[in-house]
Amino acid sequence: MPDRHHTEVEEVTCREFVELVTDYLEGALPDRRLELVEQHLVMCDWCKTYLEQFEATVEALPGAAESESPSREAERALLAGFREWRAGG
Amino acid sequence: MSEPTVAFKFLRPGAIGPFSGFRWPQPEGGEAGSWVEAAGAGGPCAGGVHACERRHLPLWIWEELWEVELDGPLEPGLAKLRARRGRLLHRIERWSPLTAKSFAGACAGRAAEHAAAARPDEARVAAGMAADGATRANTAEASADAYVAAHGAAVSAYIAAMTALRVAGREAFDAERAWQADWLTAELGIGV
Image (cartoon, rainbow over all chains, first blue to last red; front, side):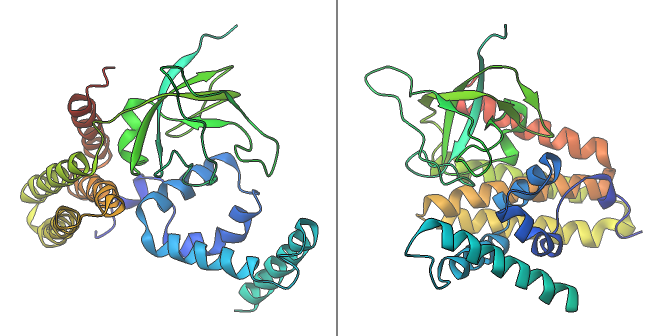
């Protein structure tokens, strides 16, 4: 019974965080899920790095430096693209 | 009409929110910091100002610890409180890299105790978890970096709780987290 007790504590895993990162950045996570994600980020350097790299990629999109509204649109486009990639993978 | 509530908030160096990136107004001249109001969607404190009770301190560890005042109706989450507005009262200076390292070491010891009590069929995995906790605590101890110390404390505490869970179930997990909160409370002198 290797994982007998593990299911008894609600938490977010690294794998789940990768799935949730776009919703996290868009502020679209429900409160409970958001809190579990943040608890995970306190401890997980791997996911913190992943998040920072993801945010840096969004910031580096063309138009991000010129004004705020285009960068928001570009961010949405990237997130949509990421979702498509994930769904296809 | 709700009464202001005193709670706690871990922040990054410079009183910066670890998730929002928001720089909290710090106390000056003996006066509390300015009130921070919850912003709408996309704001620095979207949905509310967050802090935690002392019993949830081990779950939110970063480099700085502050006592905060919350105002307005409180909404409890899983392990945090949300309010309409909040302000920093004072930094808890006793939370330092040194304290974080001590806490990490104490939690590594707790993980080892839990592992020692494991049934034979759980002993190998539990021992591995405890060894990981010891490694994290040693890494924190050896570093001069405040982040490494705080992160080591958070991870060592998590490992101790998960080792307790593995060995003895949910009640032991909750008891371990309660022990950790008591340790921090006593060490930091932050009362109930």
